[in-house]
Length: 167
Image (cartoon, rainbow, N blue to C red; front, side):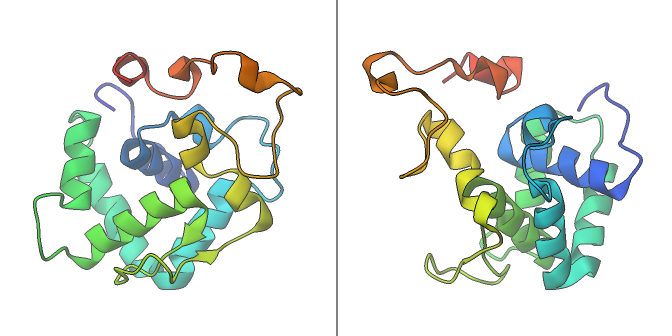
């Protein structure tokens, strides 16, 4: 984010925010040719807005104010990683982060691992947890039979260059 201009549309802002929170590139989160219909970015923004569009707007505003700082610093600030009493915007950021990784919406005030709601059929399959693990959801794979006999593909295509080398 250091030299990148702030995105202009609310959706672009949401994707840029999500990129900072998840550590995945915006192209991974919102590919130009998105195979999902509707795109996950829309489903996820809609889920967050259904919870509280005002809190999402406050989170996007806080994100805009942090432009120019290192991504990890922005993420730590928005997620309030040092706080034991997170604000509503930090709780929303945490719910959005869980949504991208797990494909389920957890209410911002939730601390339970069991009260998530899958937002769409493709959300489970599209969860970032699978890419982070270099795995695939049970019962679903785009790889050819016998793929497990080879090393997994590198993470260089889904993580920013400075983070792909640290895995």
